Length: 327
Length: 261
Image 1 (cartoon, rainbow over the protein chains, first blue to last red):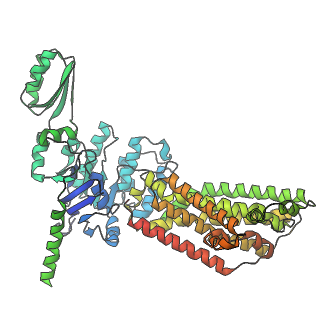
Image 2: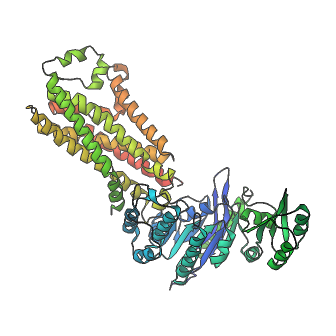
Image 3: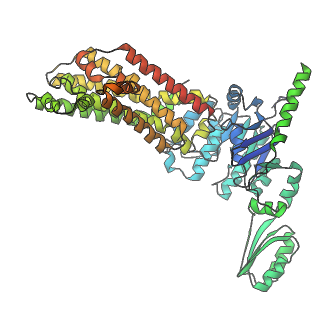
């Protein structure tokens, strides 16, 4: 943390691409994660979030561009192994062996990575260590996953959909934990498809749709105006009037009510609702796909655009050219 | 060093114990059966079988305890049974981790893929060594118990030289394991190949025109019955098996290294 952040950015992604042939999972992504921040990597399911994370850890080989993790080039296995001693990873699927106890798993992880913080973490999270994994609830398994990700006091923690499967109360605890870790100096990079979660804990956010990174400048606006999904059961006439409110978009009428995305003032919505005979109302976080439909007119899960390959090659050539000038 | 081997070996203790007990019990049954059959001309029974079958059963000098054990215990349990078992277990090794999304976390450890694979493979030495030692001792004591005797060096060689053979079977499984992402497919493929190689060797042994085919089968380089009866062996055979094992493991390492997982 004392090192010059300009020299060793925790994560630096440059024109990174992964082309599976039929699907362009990551299309020339470029961004940096700064030391000591919580960086949220937001995108609908299937947008290429896991692909990026798995490239950063050397599980997948990029088809173009490069990235460094704690200064290590992801193409350089030796350097990446060195860096992994200071990286914690929480995968989307933990896949712990069913017959093994939590304790055995932590012992194994400790022997591979170290266990400087394991006691402290066990005070916060308390999975039943003496039990085999097959008896674990989803929440217990995620807790064990969090412990293994932080147990060796890493400088950088990468988490793939860390809150999926956690109930709201545990999500709140998780958010609190992430904030404390950030304040203690750990850099945290995590992916999510839930807008509200990212909004609550992240310092900065990158949004990926169809394998491409959305402009970082647009993110604040997107987050502020993401809106809520409102579903009202009422009479047909009332439905029409409610849907006519300012800030209502993406209206869907159904037999005994209406559903829409609301981006306006909450007071105005509540006042309008109070005027009608509302049988049921549900206000929830809109799925990210709907937010994208609202802002871009298309959902984020479709395949990426073609014709980017020429662009992703040029920076490499430029840097190669610079080197030759130096020589 | 060897943290992964230690962890994986710990997961194999139960299976290894059960396997050792099971095979020892089977050996006990065969030794007992030998005492029952004494006086009956067993070889006559086998002479009626076609030569290929005789070879497959290793039906040489069945009236001696060495020959009987060689045919009934070692040709079947060691060459076929343990060979298939190790191919099966090794087949599920990496493919099973991929299928259960377990490999993501393992590959985030600060070790190379090559070392992870080698350490996982090394955990298979536990069943290989323990089953050999336990059953070897059991057979010696059982034979002694019925008043027969068996040459100790022959018995020790039969077990020791089975190790290169079993390593090759496990390495065949490992190649399948790094090639596919479904444990069941890798396991079936590995078992199928080892079994076909076993059949090929027994089938073409007597057909001179095609007898070169037998050289591709690992079973050609390990003959427990001859070892038990005469104690004769060719070191070159074991060397060939060890080389094949190393080549297969190296191939697995290269494939695993290049794979997108």
